[in-house]
Each structure stands twice: as structure tokens, then as C-alpha cells.
Length: 168
Ligand code: PNS
Image (tube, rainbow, N blue to C red):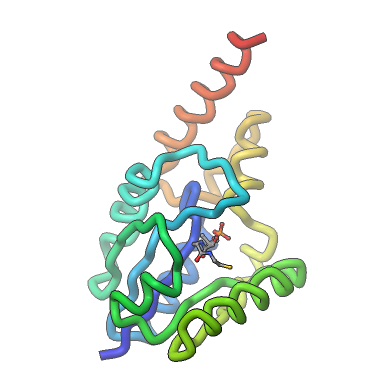
């Protein structure tokens, strides 16, 4: 059985992530979507909340499982019998960082391949960070996020803005 892992911050999952999940799920027997910690980012949602979002948006995909992990991706992949790491590639700016991560992960676990799926053109510039920034200025992000998570996302953005106002 061929098992792949698609790791990411998913803070929150976007339509771009979902597109990669749906395409990767067709290539492997099992796909584990794993919410992980990116040391360079401060998350808006907890690991549990991001996991719950993924459960609701991937409910239609029978070979997709959702998990979360606070350690190294290479160790997670080994422990769960994953042969491949799936990553989405958007604009060229992703390439250098992803290339470096792929090399490090292979060094840590030489059995592990990294497979890059190019983003669909409509998601080329979509990122969770851009969605959060747009929403914080009141822009409509309903075409960028799965409908199942939209209301909870907007509520968190509103609470965040209220907290920032109160801190002033
Ligand atoms: O969605 P992101 O933020 O681009 O995902 C990055 C992520 C979470 C996949 C990456 O930071 C990661 O693999 N974190 C787990 C810790 C790890 O293995 N770090 C070493 C990679 S160089």
C-alpha cells in the first residue's frame, strides 16, 4: 500500500490546499493530511481547530485521513509508513524554500521522496496568510476558502480585530 503525507500549517485550509488534496488522493492508496508546526509562523487557529476544519472539508474523500504532529516531518513519515511527501508549488518564490526542505527531509530519511504538485492557475497566488490579511481588512474571501469553514474563520478574524482594538 502506498501512503503519502501532505504536511502543512493549514491555518486555515484554503481552496488551493483542497485542490492539492483531491489530486494527491488519486495518486496514492492513502493520503494523510498532517497539520504541523511551522516555527516561522504564529498560528491563528490551534492544531485541533485546524484538524477539525480539515475533517469537515475532506469528508468526501474516503482515502484521506487527517492528523496533527508537533515534531519532525521525516520522523512522522517513517513512523506512519509514508513513502512520499506531497507539497503544492505556487509561484517561483516557493521553490527555493521547498527545495531546501526536500533535501533536509531526504537527508533525515533517505527512503522519503518529495513530490510537488503545481497549483492550478486560479490558486497560484493563494495562501492562508494572504486570506487572513485580506479578511482582516474586511475583504470578501468566500471564493478562497471552503464554505464549511467560512463562518468560523470570519468569526475568529472579527474576534482578533476586536481584541486588537481593545489593546490600543
Ligand atoms: O504550510 P507551511 O507553513 O508551508 O508548512 C510548512 C511545514 C509545516 C510543512 C514545515 O514547517 C514542516 O515540515 N514542519 C515540521 C517540522 C520539520 O520537519 N521541520 C524541518 C523541515 S526543514
